[in-house]
Length: 413
Image 1 (cartoon, rainbow, N blue to C red):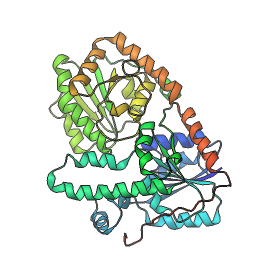
Image 2: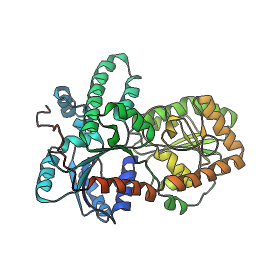
Image 3: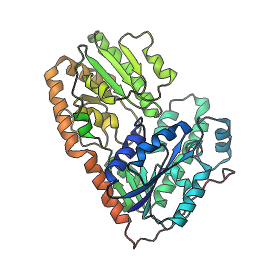
């Protein structure tokens, strides 16, 4: 099949969950399908990674969006636009005209759009569109807005209403909607006209890749936090960890170390290690397996947001014991006490972490169970097979579909 894929990022290097997902799906599906990739970039220097993706794609085209989201132009445009800031900052004006050209001159069996905010780039077309929602955006922004100063709340809530409106609009507008978990499907189903269009294709992990990097135990009891800090729920989680959970752990185990790893740490995140000898913060590292292999426990105190978590899947694949909130493992089939330890409060999360650090046999048993589990259910070879079945169904010639797309104009209206 010939597929046109639209992504709000270049799927390499593998710095975020979205990049990891798209890269691995391209890798797995390239043998069965011919994929033309249209991706947004923030900096022209990213073009150096196109070669890495051409081994899986017949063609890769990139389109420049604003380098920094919070520009005066983006803010003013949002103020007069029916679209939310999330759409405006991820808009590349020239992408739509190029898509129109390709749809006129080339034959595609389907269009695969990652995230609803890529949908405004689409012109009207008879080609069926598959929309993938890696997270439910408006819920994450609602959680953030609830914690900001009252003076900012009205402005944020107004923008969140626009996010919800357009997110729901494109859920209904697409031919097939892919979500990350059964929980996401259950939440979205009442909001779409045809719930049968929703399919679950979870995130996955390259288990063989993690097998190639054996554990290198750190003599000090080391706890790991992993997360991309551009995602608001990760910022919330790491602040909860450092301010409320870690003091409970360090009080009972003064020799313990907390290693915080993630792409794009802000000055606020880097500041978390100030005057805390037991805490270290590191930006994107060349090989995440190094962080997992030298840590005894991954802690994922995620409090908000939707979608499955790469940090949990990768920890399980690496043989690292996991302590998490229910939200952090939502949508996964893990069982508490068998594959992961689950807690809802700072005290519960701290107690589980301390218990694993103090009892290596329990830590090892949990890690081994988790590794077997992720190999059985979440290897990318299995996940890509599920997506391939949906591709085949959508590519049937009997489908004739024209979306009621709403496109961003130069005026933003």
